Image 1 (tube, rainbow, N blue to C red):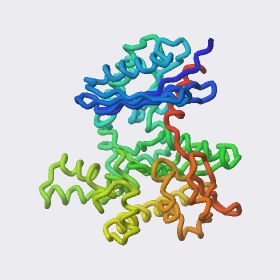
Image 2: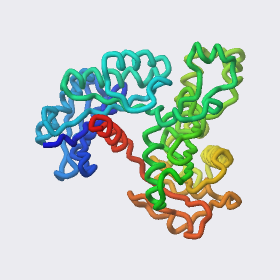
Image 3: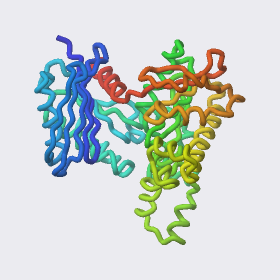
Length: 400
């Protein structure tokens, strides 16, 4: 029997998302979530898409070890236990790989130590990623644990793109450069867009707009990322749900000197209290659109700021790529908010961008074109699948 299953784990600070996939046909055998870890109100939701049902468990789950053991028990109850010889690997989402990790990597003690060393670059995410790997290793010590890094896809950016124009010695000492994030999504979507166009990935130039609560753009030339909007951290770039995106760095100095805010207060302000939330009090695009439709001024300005930033990046990345074959929308907002897509493309006919209004209004879980057949640049909606991308990369590594 050939082992073809991969368990994908995405460990957050108080949650674990998981999927079990069979890479023989890319089917999902189980999907689940453990949330509120460490609280009395912990919740585990487990579903078997092919089995037509789901289960919910409520009650305290003390820590990540208890959470992953609970996940293992749920999988075992469906005959999908971690002891199965059909399990080929566990794939772990790791947010930051720095400059060291530019491809999926089998976790060893040395690799795990290096991921820990990167915690200062991703203090909210890498610690939980490390914990998930550590616990999974104890549950099935003989199984390859594969780390797949959010930053890896963007590691192909040219040095002059990745560097900030600051003192070179300081940048080296503190590892200050543009890393980019959402890499598994950008990799999957750019490749899927080439397939949608019926062309080899190596021949296609794509601008990917990953629009969720966190949002990022990338310029992908022939399957290779040459520019992305997020930088040292996920704060740079587009207007997001709670993050400001691009900002004059002197705003930080002004808030500290004139406003008397501490570094932590400014960090919280820009990451958790800005973006759509800061501008109008809502970070859910559906609510922003509803309010804007009713004439709410704050929501209208927030929406217009969001769209204006998108247009700027579309224009900038058109210049970077020189030739664009497709602009593609993905993630929660990108896949579902037809108003955002329409507004982002409006007025960009000079760049070859236009929409088919009827096609844009259709909701579908499938990749699709929303531009007219004769459009110079295709506009597409491609649902992202980061779990499948992690599983694909992990499986390829352990079976090569």
